[in-house]
Length: 273
Length: 284
Image 1 (cartoon, rainbow over the protein chains, first blue to last red):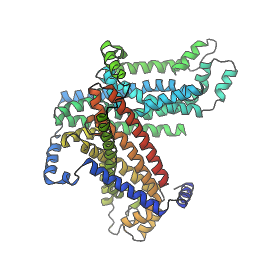
Image 2: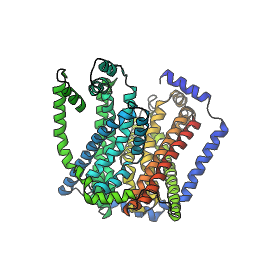
Image 3: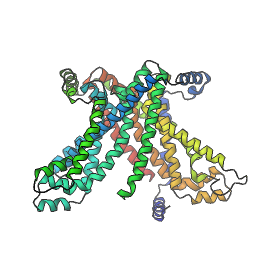
């Protein structure tokens, strides 16, 4: 443990909350939990009676063995590819839109433009991907394209904010020097500021892409293609064997992406300092 | 990258020394992207298709004004409370799952790491930790919406499936992070207690928790905030709450109801943000 961290922990303990507030908060939290269970009328103990445990066991048993016929595996593989493509295209579109929105959001076109851009970004970001997907299915029809749009809309809100903050924090000297030497506004931005923030933007994009792969796998629940749509379809028809194959594919996808991103991050870490 | 190439083309006498490499990268990206666009059925023209424009236009036109019919508002209030209750109950169950697993997994309470055990056997502890780690990974690898979809089939429509789904995924996340927090703090007091012969539970209570309790609590509160957002989404597969209401309104193309629900949802997320920030400030 670092000495600095231990010091700050000591300082934090110095002004820690007094005993009464602590007990009051704990009591309120416990009360909220009890009220929640009562309000939802969930019979937790009823879940663990013999009958419902047997029913649960039967239900789980229906998922085994998974459907491993070559034809179905091929379809699952195709849906996995589709999920990957949806996440990649969605993230790329979001990068383009986020970069465009980051320019006003970083305040380089005045205060009014900055406020307007921030409002749009907040709106885009606070609607979850699945809700965007449900809306986009109406706008673009069933299929993976709706998933691409949904991911792009939500992630554009995230990127716009992150990219804008990176731009604000970048030193302005290089761009100003280019401007004063007579270069055009676009060239000065591209070679002065964009070059500085590009590594950070790419790092954000890779991180979000990883999250979007996971998200793309479930967007299909509202009809936006990929593994999710397959799972939803087979669950609706009570075809548990097929559903368990799809869940297995999601598992594999998440693990592979996790391992790959961990490796990539370790490889990139020294370069980024 | 694209901007850079375009900019260099605008000023012919000045050459971008990297222009060729950038052009190459751009071409390579296009070659990779093309099949992806085909797989993902990428056709922006679908947005401007007459039929979908009509559907979307009618739906969006209904957004204003938001629906304020009294019986709908009553329904909305009930769904909002249900969403909050789902998040709270889910996090409570997740805590019940996570706490013992984190206790079993954390390295800083490992007796066998201190030195050779009297019997010389180190493997039982290591095997237990590996198993627990694997369980936690499996729990959190599948998104909560998938668990909700599966559990709705087993438990029927309603919030019970959502609460259990939250408990499973968030139990996995909380367990992993709890163990990491316990390992990252000052572990010397716990080690001293263990070396002096105290039990694991006593070492946790008197050695680790005093230093780590605030961080543990504030992470749990942060996860509650995430659970509010997630419980809205889970409604789309039939697990109750605001999401289920929104799903119904969208299926009936009722724009006024959908916009009311969206507004309430955004307010709820703001409220959860504020409450969680407040709680974390009190805890600090």
